Amino acid sequence: MASEGEGQGADGRWSFLVILIAISAAFALVLWPFLTAILWAVIAAILFTPVYRRLLARIPGWPNSAALLTLLLIVGIVILPAAILSVALVGEATTVYLRIQSGDIDIARIFTTLFAGLPGWATTLLANLGVKNLADARDIFGSGAADGVRAVLGQALLFGQSIFGLLVKLSVVLYLAFFLLRDGDALQRRVAAAVPLRADQLGLLVDRFIVVVRATIKGSIVVAIIQGMIGGTVLWMLGVEAPLLWGVLMGAASLIPAVGTGLVWVPMALYLFFSGAIWQGAVLVFCGLFVIGMVDNLLRPILVGRETRIPDYVVLITTLGGLQLFGFHGIVIGPVIAAMFIAVWDIAAQMRGEALPPPA
Image (cartoon, rainbow, N blue to C red; front, side):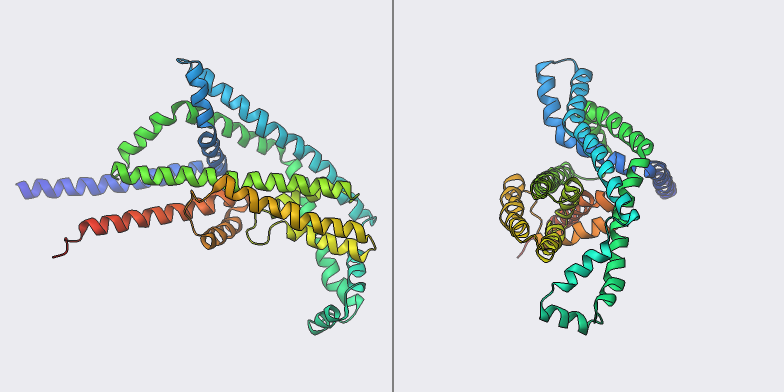
């Protein structure tokens, strides 16, 4: 009888496990359209929880007011500046796009100018690659560059047109962030009670997750914003057209490890040199190497330090992989997955070490 009861109990546990997995998968499917909104709500809560706790310490007994004030701070220092920048960027991108469409800006002609100014060894190299004259260069590279620029500008225009969907997701971010700030500790305790891990193991995973999110935001997003602002300012001072657009592209390029802002300012400096703007090109090269480039070398170690404990090559590969799979959101998702992977295997090594018999 005991064995029969144990068998029924085991069957019941397996049945419940199947139901648990099925319901959890269905719940994840329902949340999937708002996955990125949930991600950024969690990030906002992680970054601004210290601010919420300081406000709550000043107004004890008023958690709703402290959470609301924290949301207003998020809107004031993050969302409002981003909205103003987006409006200006869409306007500038629209102007450039219309000029390309009308022929005022001829990408193929610009590339032809660059090709004509190349030294002999460069033209020989291009000839070996099948580019033997200006017509080939215009057909192969010019049209491709034009298509690429049009694609980037087209995405900026689509961003402006999808403002309603963006507002919906932004509302979800703020709404969810409010409850994560206010009830974060209680939610963490409920998750800890449900997850089948020891307290120290779960604590390690949570701590690693929080550290990597904070380090990624500080070490990538903040540095990208600063580099984009400096790059855009330099281009504006040099009289380059659409400096805001190029500054934003420079900030976005800085998120790509190893290459960074050079993806933008190097071709632009070459264009300035070949078009006769020698001193402007020299200034851009100097600022690119010793101002824009040094921001990353100086600020990233200060903002991040070694708190993530993830090897640089892992950060590079996971960031690129995250960008490929998840777009802009992959900047955070890639390193976080890497950190969780390392933490889980650290726990597995710990458990295996505990399971091994002591040496004789």
